[in-house]
Image (cartoon, rainbow, N blue to C red; front, side, top):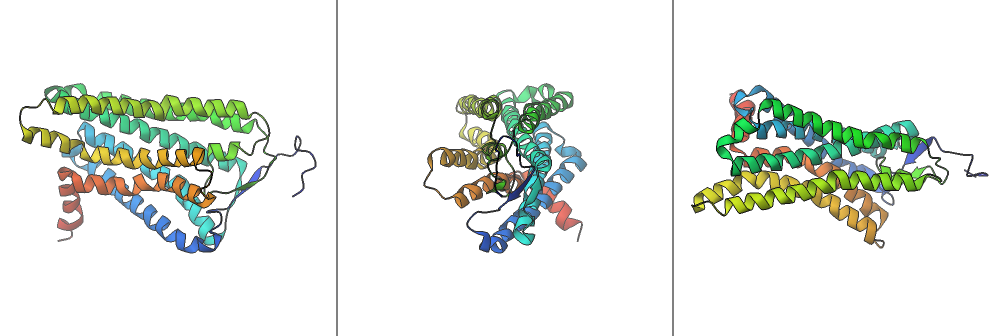
Length: 314
């Protein structure tokens, strides 16, 4: 489409390409996407059901895990159905309002998950450093307030992005080489108001995810300090084991994201399809593997899953 005047024309409809350069492989690529999504939906739904219906799992750690599972479902549902529609039906056309709505849910849910992982680190810190006061500190009332704070923070910090994107004009192109809409990818095709968007995006990143990473790191330094002061090796091993699942989830959540950010900034020789695949790994990895990790490493959840899936059938 020819553009006579960049200051007048602003695209209101965009076309998502999926995985650029691999369009002929979309049907095969859709298979792991579909399997990952089904696993995430079933696994996290089962996790939520078990935690909510078993009074023995109404402790702080499990309630935070229930929040994480709910966020996992929202995150994967915000992205994977759109990607599958592109892969299966070439349905990549998306209106600007719908694109902004999608990126709002993607980014706000991602910030929510980061906040939940932070409070789960705080939960492990209290459980190991103050075991006798664990249930008196982390009461159901406090857990509820923490949950509300997490979601208010995520939606509150991402909500202004809607207005920042609505105020700019998109005149460069309406072709988005991705499977979903995201703030950075959409903003770079704007023709005005980029500075405000860039600086606000940087503020959100530093005040949420980056701050969470720093606080999680500090929490685990304090946890390790407390663990290595325990008198017996058995006690140290048991304390470390209680943190194992959470550490695995932290690595899965932040690891691909950090790697993807580094490749975007410095990996100019890396092809666009690798960048898009890495971005999708960031979104797919945790929702799919979170229930598996906690189901395998947490005995209480493993026992309840066995009871629900097998004993009732028998």
